Image 1 (spheres, rainbow, N blue to C red):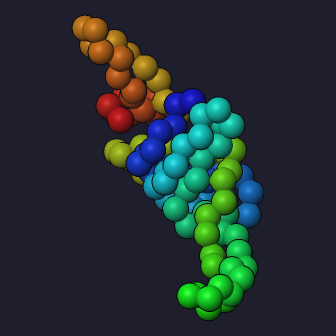
Image 2: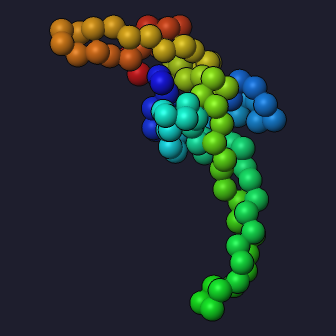
Length: 100
């Protein structure tokens, strides 16, 4: 999976198409990511002895194929490539060629 935590991504498909956000959590085994402010879901919290009942809004996961990295130079969606600098493997943006 090429998308990592703290990357800024844009949503390509679905009800939140076009929204940009930061990746909060990456789940490589499931090929899913949680993006800040995208795929908001409503959760009903039951009342307990110490806490009142409430309705919580939290982000749900989306498939990694539905997001793309935002290029720092142009602000558009870009794919991710790799290049080697000595012994280091570096992620680069395909559109601009800049390091991610």
